[in-house]
Image 1 (cartoon, rainbow, N blue to C red):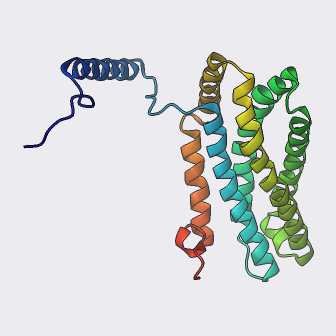
Image 2: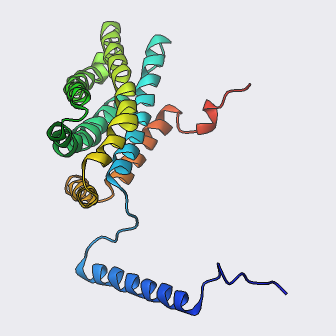
Image 3: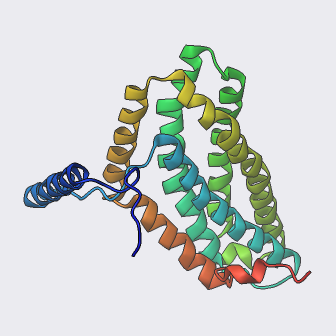
Length: 235
């Protein structure tokens, strides 16, 4: 016979509490459905939200690196793959993710007089990134890629973008986002998560992160980059 440790086993009151919580949760979901509101599957903190969006950017940078490699190897570069990646960066990274940072994070750091030099550099890099995206979109046209000189200009723009954004996002993940939690109250921090979700729904109609993950995965498949195992070294 298996013995149960009463110190860890849930008692009847605990089970009742769990049951009540589940019932209330089910009622809340049902009410949202009746009102036509989207169901909330998970709670994501503002920092986690921004950092997982960086994951989408990292995958876009991988696509840019592949385009650079193909230009150097004189292999075909599908212009639509580069253009679709640049448009994803424009819509999801620049017009959404970076705007969150510029509207909600950067002003609070400046007001608290914390990480101001870093914030100013990050803001400048956002502007430079948008200039490079304009250039990439212009150079990724099918006709332009038939010209060797235009290919080299595209390669240079892609290189500059990757070179800037790899340290840019790393510095945000390791310095800016951890510091942000320390300069706002818990209530303000939690409410920002709601603001971020509301903005995402306005721009993408809900599930903006998931939609953009699917979009970048489709481009990876087009270029043969999707299989993660191919990046494992044979050592």
